[in-house]
Image (cartoon, rainbow, N blue to C red):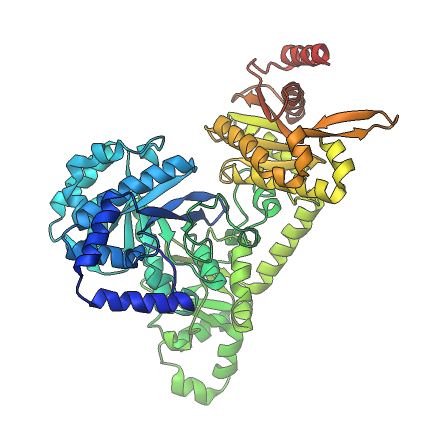
Length: 624
């Protein structure tokens, strides 16, 4: 459960709240609680849970707020009064109803994470269907129950049965507060939750605390083995953010990313998105696997020794391998740190030092705070991480692991060389305005999918009536509306399996492998219509366009800028080339542009090269 950190005036309010928690619950507070429960005075704030790879929003945690202007507005006091009044279960169920109704009414996309006490959850299993029947348009499949207060349930059998009931109607389960004690770990084994949330205590200053780091790595290792997704809660600084990402943790939540709000943010702030891997680097390379370039590309398999081996043994390894710069030290296969060649040889070159220290365990000679990252960590993330620590680490290198086990090392030199090469390649092929991959990588990506005999959808996206807008409002605003379109398109793809490119000008290509591609396209059109109104003068919005003179001096009315999306389906095994597919998509886009406003056209005919192209060409000529 994540909520506002007390700062400034909020700190004074928090202190007052803490004082109230120590005082007896008065009759007035109990009466206020009863009014809140019966009078619809509870409200919901929603805090985004973000995908730390792509910047998209996985879902939102719902946080209750009591009546405005009263002590019960503070959720801690609200629940304190409810527990003291014997109405905690009633309050929790009412919160569920309020959260689901408000979330459904807002029409927000994504999952809804609902906190529910373990004790209340254990007693409510038979009510699962009834409680979730009030979700409105919200599908139970998009509801995730976060179990809190695991220590309050001495017997897991009733809770396990309740979880089974909720799962039977489509709900998913999350374990909240991982790191608070043995009880939560025991429940993890018993309930096999789909999501594991790391407690904010563990995340706070984790970039500086090796013990917390090892604890979180262990949690992530267990999560991988159990198939659970990990969410890091309480991320409040850039340094915590980079460390969390460096471990391959996919999802995060906290005030650094976004604060709770009554109208949920549909995307992260621009300054947060700016520190994620850029689209050009993320998409343009490794297209056969569609992965961000990772530290695997600079992995060096260097010798590793157990921590009990004498330092003289490490010295002998360096002496026998003059090219070796680092040796890793392990404890039962898990990395502890690195011993750099230069430092050790400088010490061991003195016979007196070798005689005095040669038998000491090598663990005494490792770095005190080694950098350890998962093998799937992106090059950009490790670059950020290293930039925040001392130059000592940059020189010595970092350890690369897989599921917590030692794989090898990476060096600062290799990292800089690889990132520089990627930046040069990205700059060569990326569109300079959006930094999205251009024509060459788009064709390369389609060729890879054709060779792999995959089924996919190619969407040609074009801005309608863009030139008149550019002429009237200036090229700078024209650039901004193109960048807005690029950002929206990027938000609505799954970067693990989909691809976004910028051909040039106001033309984009999306290659979808997501099965819900149609709904993604529709959301793009809806969002574009909403988010571009800020670019127009009020009178142009009211008229639905503007009149400007053409080159002959004749006044011509032009509608507002809109998006047209033409879609073609490429079935696995079709005898097509990327160039033929590009023409199919272009012709489908031309059909979409015949539809006024923001429009989607899906070509339903099979893409047999000659006959389909001829049919599409005739359609376009007929509509010209």
